[in-house]
Length: 488
Image (cartoon, rainbow, N blue to C red; front, top):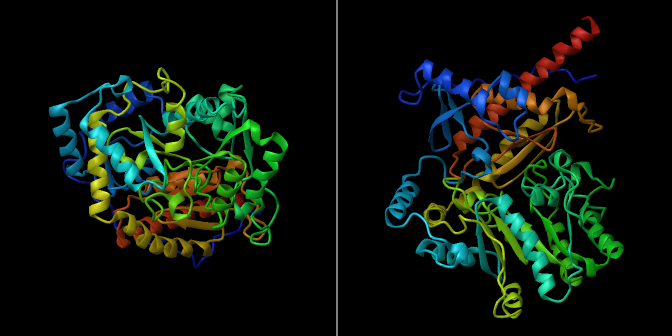
């Protein structure tokens, strides 16, 4: 039986959102755009029926942590749009840098040799702020492309080392490494892979460090971080001579914002080093200050052999992904022969205009001390989110820096989940969106939040209050359904 709404859990009164002059389109234009969206545009991660029946917001303006849609409705961007708008919307510094670069040189074919000034400068900048030892950079157009590059990089490296059988990858259950075919198979989210099975061979998935719902049935800390030791068991079963790399997000994002115990990533690093397995950290979401460190892996005391990132490198102003790796990998390729090349890349690899946006974005992050701000404001966010634990259907709350999640449960004592067909998290997401807050459903029954790094305490209050109201609205709906079912 669903737990009833606590009468003392009152809805937090929110200031009414004012429509902004200049943001709204005239009603005829707005209606036409919504119809065209339903008729022509496919949104990859949106249920098709939802788009066709309820529709989705169409944004026309962004400033700071706020967005406005075609009707002039104001939203707080509680997900940094897609985990990526670190410096907020409407930053004229980035706009000016992009315009200036396009005026000088809009494109250069880095893939086949000739490159550009901002491309070289950004690569150099990245090696200076990266975890220790990462000295080489490959640019892509986003995180999925970057992880496709990782698959080729790892297998090419071991072939060049004379160990061509080291082709397997180990990653985590419910991991997300992109939605392109190879990157999706690296991940462990079944719904993303079923449409294109069979995938690439040699992909192995293991239990993740999800202490609230341990997939090994153990309890932290008495488990002694057995979810890391599982990698050791996989190596024993498969043979280290067949495993090329272990890849992980330091904090799972799409999988539910799963934050590992402090010992987990260093233990994984030790196992990889001992068995001569490359360790790859996917920091597409956690890179560039999100967790209160420039890169989450460095904040956890780990230097990977390969690091993948995207999103926050340009704050989403233009599409850019990257792979950084150790000098030893590059020198192995270099020693292979005069005609050897890393035969991989894309037309827009190292695009000069995009790299100019990246340089301007990183300058803002450093000048405004946004890494430190994410750490400081993250403590306040954690404190405010923790107040949601009192709600009867909130089972767990977790956050690090400015990324977090609220997990909704049917029974707090047993951690029983709501049936999938009740779509509880989806309903909470919809309620939040209706009140002008953008969040995301992640890992089933989790509501993820990930605001721009510039967010203030007052805006955190606004965000958490709206999330509380959305959860209370869902609870009231559940309570009404229970009363109807019981005839009361």
